[in-house]
Image (cartoon, rainbow, N blue to C red; front, side, top):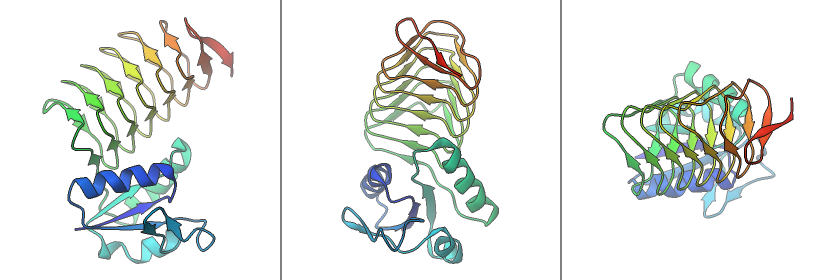
Length: 206
């Protein structure tokens, strides 16, 4: 089984490692910084986005390994239009309820948890040790950083970024493209397009 990862970053390394643990035998990287970037750890970078688009039939799976939510969405949509076989990668130590759903291109890293009736969109990053509790709705192209916790029924709009070790109270909504800072404790709804920090979380900037 052959998988292509677009984005030769540290994030891409973690995807590649999880993919190998799931039994993907051949990992091939592509990155728009090629040829300046020719290696990503033990893996070789084989060209830019255009090179991947020309070789889509060579791969049984494709994942975008870019941390930036907006760029990840742009690249994943471009690949989807070209007919790429977008796959989700769920690390073997992650716990995902059989009653939860995960969209295409989502990655779930080691020791992360997705509990029953949670709905996780496409192109999402659920990082190491993060928790998505029951009945949460996570929009497309969200990034939930390591050890962040969404309590039951939380709703995240598209392209939200939740920082490491942040906590969001049950039934809270966070609007599209907002950022929840590292370690923040969110106890009230957050509007779209803002950055919130602190305990309790407050708006730092628009």
